Amino acid sequence: MIAERLAAARAEIQARSMAQINAEAAAVWGARAVAAYERFRTSHDNRWLVMAIEFRHEACEHGGEAGTEFLKQLHTELDQLMPP
Image (tube, rainbow, N blue to C red; front, side, top):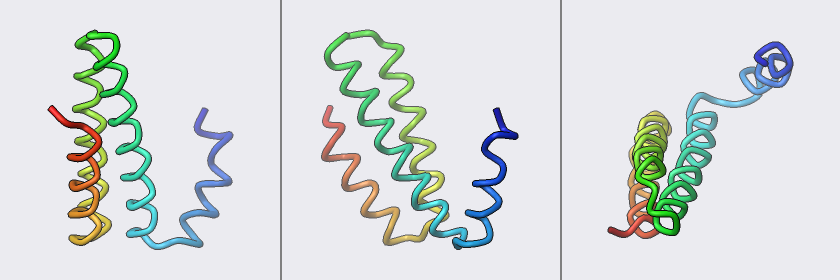
């Protein structure tokens, strides 16, 4: 699992900054959060709500490492796409 992704990870680490890597990770986790939240809204399965909350947390954690302005934008988008 890890070994097959290692070459790409090494190349990424050499080519990109930590902020870039964290911004991309935040966007991926954010998209997962929204998708899980949408699935919760249609299925009413609370497990998807728990996953949406966890994915959102991961997005914010990585977003914070990408910088304050990025984190603000991330929060704005998540709030718009995950209404109560």
